[in-house]
Length: 496
Image (cartoon, rainbow, N blue to C red; front, side, top):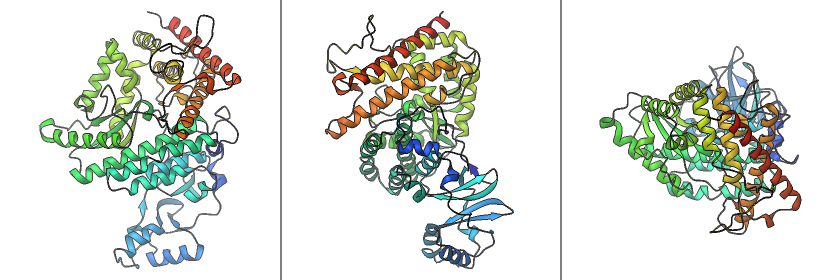
């Protein structure tokens, strides 16, 4: 009856995380199991209980929510907000059963899940009460307040503020707080992995709210669809500096003449809204507002079949965007079937993977033949290194090849490198080295951007070596060396 948290983009607690300093508050949430936050036995009532009796119970127990349980199974929950909005505001008869006002089949977390999963669930879905299950058995409830005591949940409240907005202008004002959120995470030495998930959760919330506002303006969608994030948003690796990459997958019942105008208007509204909120239009127009990237399932299947079957340079460029996809809003099953089809096509497809590696090698770390870090020699960014294209993007590309070659459906780069089966494209040791290199490079990027934000400058990916210590320079060179070495290994393996 419940919707248990199974989002593969969420992190799992891991002893091999190597994700940053021990005082990282978000890392604490990743290593703290949900059971540690459950403070009392669950307060529950059977479905037939009256609203009045439930309100009395909440008052007596001094709780803001009650679970609806029968024969040990969770059916729903009610909160003080439900009493306010669905009972008092509407004048509903309080003798009616609580099922009339309950949230049915609520999202939940497992007792052994990391608390960080609960944080992201709240931020992405604008909820403040999450039931905790041990298998199918209800063991308690955690709230946003419980997470506040862990010192890292401003994202939950920012997401809540986003869902309260009734206009693009309101969302634009709310989005200005994202830079401050990244600053606070950086000040706490939060890991890049944690920061990427938290910042991306806010992007997800803004996107979802824009779609809700668009549907309120245009009316319900005439056929099922799913709004899909691509690129860094799909991988949950965003920072305060990002553009938008997205697309729409429509049900195959879509008819251009009948339904085309609606989805064109909706996608235009959302992409314009994202741009207004600081997510600039994709320079390559890889957005749902572009007709090519707003298509039914069967057309998307044709795209992927062509890209994997005839990997020309343009196709390879597109695969770097559209092989990293994650459902944000709508009917996620429309994307699920496409992703499974793609993985069937790429697993063991050595010719396609060889082309992917060749494309990945176009981005190389800034190291000289003498293994020294080299800076950009001319132009606007003279004297800097590009942390994104010189270090992070090559790792993202290598991890993508690794996932596609093994049929792994993970999207986040760290998660793609978290496991390595025998015979995989990347060995377990190499995967660990790449994870550590990714974390360091992404952490340096976030710290660099945070310094720029504090100085009132627009954040970018170009860092001067004078910004960091000699010790960090040594680590930076080591990270680039790891990337360069793995590029060479995979280049030899998939040579064509």
